[in-house]
Amino acid sequence: MQKHTLGSLISASIILVAFAVPLFGHASVNPRTAQAGIHHKIFYVRAPVEKEIPVVEWGYEVSQEWRDNGGDVNSFQDIPGYELHVDFDDDGKVERFYWTGTQAVMETFQMVYVSMNVPEEPGLYPFKSWQKYTDGSVVWWNEPRGEGVQNPYPAVTVEAPPILTAGVFQVSATAIALVALAISLLAFRNGRKNPV
Image (cartoon, rainbow, N blue to C red):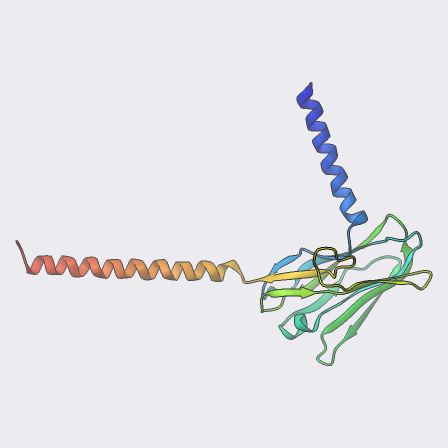
């Protein structure tokens, strides 16, 4: 009986946490890590409504670093009730995307799937975000991430693909094996030339 109760409490806690994060978290781009150089990777962007009035506009800036290092934004999921706006830089890459509408109210959040090309260079890439409310106020998520920061910007950490690391280890192991084989063959040959 106690095991059943403990299991129920754990399950309930997991469910509460799963639903609490979307409702009360900050604006984010997810997943928060990606491998360098992947094309058409699916991310989702999410922003909670944190006032008692509806959001009428919300969006993200694509950092210059993301664009300069081969990153881009390809396409967006359609959101009923919202209109998509996309601004491009001089090279034709997306530098800002945002939505306008009046559907998002308190204790809800917007979440949209976005297809992106991930930069070739590893690093931490910010996606500054904003939300505009019906009273004209704007909340920015544009502060560097760190302890005590109230409005941290969403960010994606781009990592070197593990296949490169595995490849280095594989080449090293192969090189060591070849050297060991060469030493063994030389020892064998020298042993045949100089019998005891």
